[in-house]
Image 1: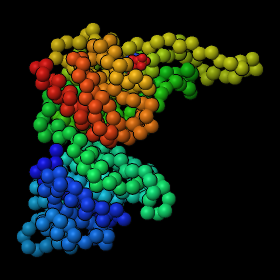
Image 2 (image 1 turned 180 degrees about the vertical axis):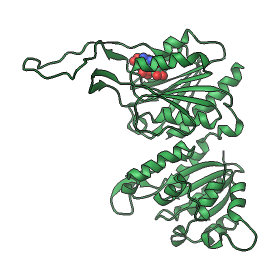
Image 3 (image 1 turned 90 degrees about the vertical axis):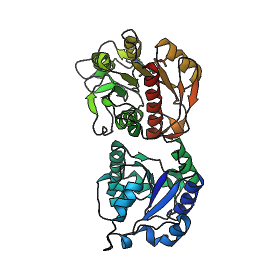
Image 4 (image 1 turned 180 degrees about the horizontal axis):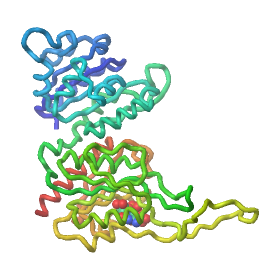
Length: 406
Ligand code: CTP
């Protein structure tokens, strides 16, 4: 992925800024050609001379930006860039990028490039957790930027938390796993892709429901990746805290029955269905019209549940040649054996098997690792990586399947 790639490394101000020098070297070792932009704050932590010596290329800084010499360096650099990598990215840099600011060398270069973009945050854990930073992170993801997860551990402030800059070798490993931006290949142009996301809710009464731990992050990342690949994407989503990717048609639903209706209505017009939703398997036989009250004699309450419709099983019968159906399997044991059974039973073209018992890649996490299972029995495991990276790998597989079914 990095061999001969033109990588523009944007370095912002952080105690981790010095690690960007090692990162530049690691990128070069992986075969990349590296050029560097330093923010004003970064120049207080590390000098342009360090990067100029390492890269043998001029370094763009605010001091050298917009000189009256007839060169427009940020545009020249933006056009040269094939991978824009902001590392370490401070909270301020993320805010600039998420809001499209163009007020210094780093932000203008970023805004002006159409290249694939990756942000590697580094900041204090409270700044990382702040609603504004999380909003900016969501916005960047919705704009198609890959945001890697900062590590958890000892921070410069003397306490522990999430916000540590990833080690240079870890960053390079995640970049190596990054799928090429599918849009560049037009992989899914002209294709209608239906993605489902989130955990369905089954009502007990007007104020209570049964649901599961799904955050919807994986499904949203899949919708964004399909959209970046040029597809016409519809996202059917159970309630989540997420912002829908720009350019995707969103259909909100609540229960499994709503989801089944929404999928069935669209399936005939769909080229690819990706069921990332965590669907409730059982629903209350009756939902109370009014709030269920405690009474002196109901020390126990028995719920009677019945099976919900299996949506994937249902569409299998309507499937026409050339249509691709992808499922996810959330398992806590016997991942691959159970996954393979679901693939066969539900007549899937691809199943992403996900071990949700592991805390690092579970339902609510930001990272994931899946094994792709195919009907011919072959399997492919992804590395542990940010959900948008895994989503890109999934879309790459889908594009491959569409090609072989042509
Ligand atoms: N799924 C579905 N309809 C359901 C339940 C699940 O379409 N009623 C889909 C999910 O969206 C997922 C796949 O089927 O893509 C597998 O879901 P999972 O919950 O892992 O498996 P189940 O079929 O529910 O089987 P089990 O309860 O045995 O794990």
